[in-house]
Length: 413
Image (cartoon, rainbow, N blue to C red; front, side, top):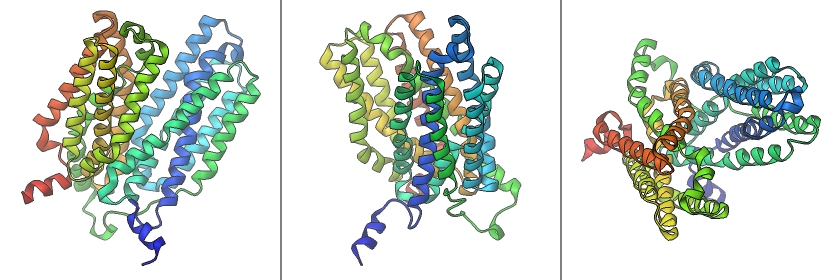
């Protein structure tokens, strides 16, 4: 066997599928670059200049644009997954990229608030195809022994583009709109061009002749999906609760700004460093165990931070939280790909992503309410309670939250 053949055999993806996965990841990354930069950093600063509005009105329009975009994205995740099941990944991602380019092009030239909001809504519809497309393509391309790690790797791989879009477009907020939208439209054009090379499908679970009837397939998919809905909601709610508050809370923890950055960096570095080990647990037929351990560690870490320990203790607890995240990410990916029937996975995963987005949108509100009600330690106490409750749910409902691999292990035990 040649060295090239040996390398191909060691890759976690099936032969010939890696280029398609990477192209889909590029489409997703470009789309996220624009989304995060436009709604998270640029419009909050530049809407007044774009529309000629006073500051108070501009802030309201920018916030509404973000909300409208997020709602339309959330509402369309399920339908986008269903369209992927019917027409294939390339067709749906290509249509989504084209609609996104059109919507942002309209936004680039408008001086009217309602047109900007309509463009934001259309952009959300186009964007809704990106995550279901990239995740399903990755799951189809990856060997069963690496699905959790592969899906997690693609998810983490777009993070630098999310941060890059936020930082770059935020820094250009006071520059001429022509410069900013030239960059944005160029990136979306790259996404549209790349979408032309996304595969339609990599494989099917069974041939059309051997598929059961549609009603039986739907019943199977719903049975596999239903237990995941509460878990999807709880975990995104828990994991986004602290996000917007971190740079408000650091003073209450007796940290400087750079101390908080160092604390976050420690947690992130530990999470990345732990992924090879935690991913093996998740992909080795122990997906539910990985998620349960992850939320238990997350709960312990957040609960520890709520006691406001000394500086060295905060860094230890940040590392504990990082390990928790490192278990949760591949564990959840392996749980989803291991439970959902392959033939119905795009539609089912799209529906699941809708529930995840709802949890993501409510998390910051719950955190803010906890801060206002319980004080500076309130978000950490609430996050710890939710994380431990989620871990307990995985234990209590373990029989309804098992993957096909775990069922096989239990049967052979």
